[in-house]
Image (cartoon, rainbow, N blue to C red; front, side, top):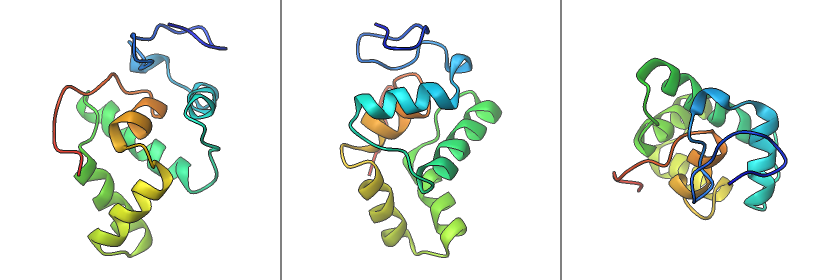
Length: 110
């Protein structure tokens, strides 16, 4: 499965190789998800990318919530609300896909 960019994706549209991700790809994936990436999105996406580089696995949603808490001095509920306002169809469905993660197998997304 491909779109305007040339990188291999699985049947659900996730990147097969997260190393091929760049911001242009993120913009294309966001457009497919009917999202416009504003300045609020990029720190989250870059945190996810850095986490992936360090651990070679997509961060669990709790790690992203912790990042938002520390970045914006929010409590966990407010940070989680913010995350799901930005990605209304879910962390795995939108945030992981746009950040160039392979489709996560299974874990707690809430």
